[in-house]
Length: 312
Image (tube, rainbow, N blue to C red; front, side, top):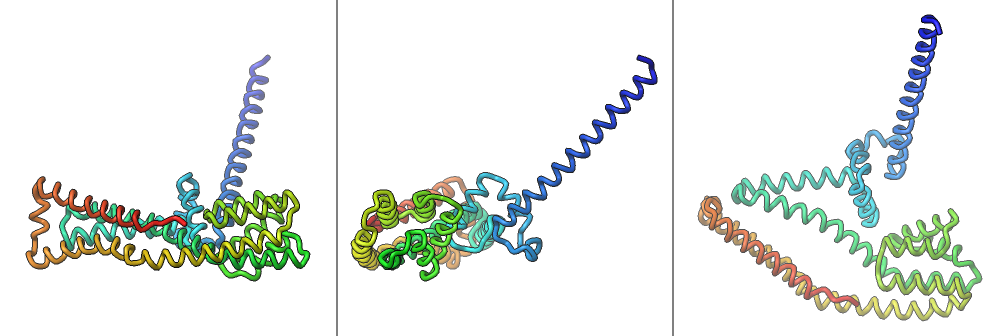
């Protein structure tokens, strides 16, 4: 092979490599654009407002992580319109603000403690919102069973009855049943669709309802009679839960009053003796005693909350 042929061969290989590199770069950029568009659609943000949504860039970065995906699932279960990026930004602001306020009002030693309490409060907010939505859904279960029973007795299929209940019931039952109806429309079985609902809103009442519907659809039994009996049972459990919550309300208030008294005592001490907290936390022994006292308040709060929690 002559030198000119070698030069032409090298030029052809170089041109092919450059063409493949350009094609690969174009495919990679297109894939990133498609992925970003898919993330925006999953975030339920309208197209014209997508780029103007607060913390849209942060939301995309958070959703790329496994932790962000779990956070998105928890936010969806709470029924709020917050995105993972917005929640992370709000949580960071609350933590930083708590640190600064504790540093200014109490002493620099209390800054990290206040930040940890703010982090716990942010995670507890998600649990509280999810528990509140779950309780609202449980309160709607007797009406849901009644609507399904009436629709089934009228000769409608279970899938049609679910869609009718989604239109008639208010949130959160209407929203959750709409997701079940969409899953059935996409070809999922009734068992898979209801299992997804049970995973989003776990409760014993919903387990009984889902088991009744699944067994009735499998065996071809009387769905109407089962739902009628289940409606009566759910109504009784609803009344029992309401009575227990009323009787335990004083204990619940006590659980939150205990740490509030501790924080109020610190404020009162610092008001009566300005600089007392800074002097107390200036030594190692003082810091140890403060940490032990705060730990005892936390243990007391946890024990009172545990005693007031009764599973029905």
